[in-house]
Length: 364
Image (cartoon, rainbow, N blue to C red):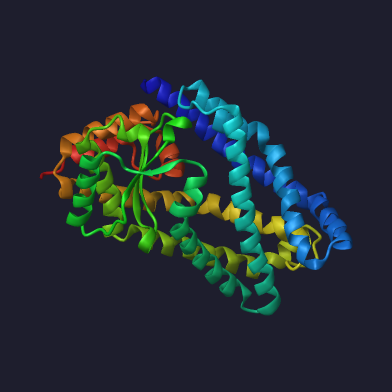
């Protein structure tokens, strides 16, 4: 099982790196070969100005989807079936691709529509105004995701196991967490992996259990998993991550503000206001995400360690925690002992072996 998990993980790491490099090359060529400029010119000649951005985004979304299709299909469908982690049909895979593409398109249209509007009206401080809008939008998205986006992909229902539901609600009360309710989703129709989450903001805050976890884990194990999720909230990790992501957003747009003249000159583009320069914004965010990824992973691993300790303090269920880690590692084919470089770049959670050792050393 460990060899299988190592093989699966290594393929995923390789595909992730290949995807980043491939996306960068596509964006670079799209600009350098003048393809973006020709599309923008064609649309500008044929459409009213308000329709240029929606039409341009549709074209580049469709182009990217089909150019990336072999890699995407292998990564999210073939590989998962090869390692017996998925039972999703090809038809359902295509439906999910369409849904996720439509959601990404709508979000991109809103964000970049605001980008061009702010760029036009705030010629000097646009980078700050845009950053603040994007940060606000990300918080709003976190609020609506449980009630709008997740139901598009999974069937949602109130947790039927009343004993388990009452136990979760009592745990939440004990940890001073306000929940509207506990729900379960039909994860098993797509994947055999297990997951649980504490999602939402304010009046959308809820617990979501995958049926692949609810049906295979004991109540003790589920309690310690959710205690970990609640611990993130109690330790204000969500707020800290929002602050970190906000800083990254501010840094990227400030970098664009100060260096875009050089980049525009290199690609022979007249200015950021030109729709043809939109892929340049994608390149900035892609490169910056690669550079900051190790820092974000380091911070996330630190938060996960703190949440583990807080969950053990709240539940006193050390044996359940250890058994949960072992089950999750086997069920999700997690790499228990990754190479330090792999851990540095890819792991936003401590490896399973580290989490178990840390839990076993805790005195309760």
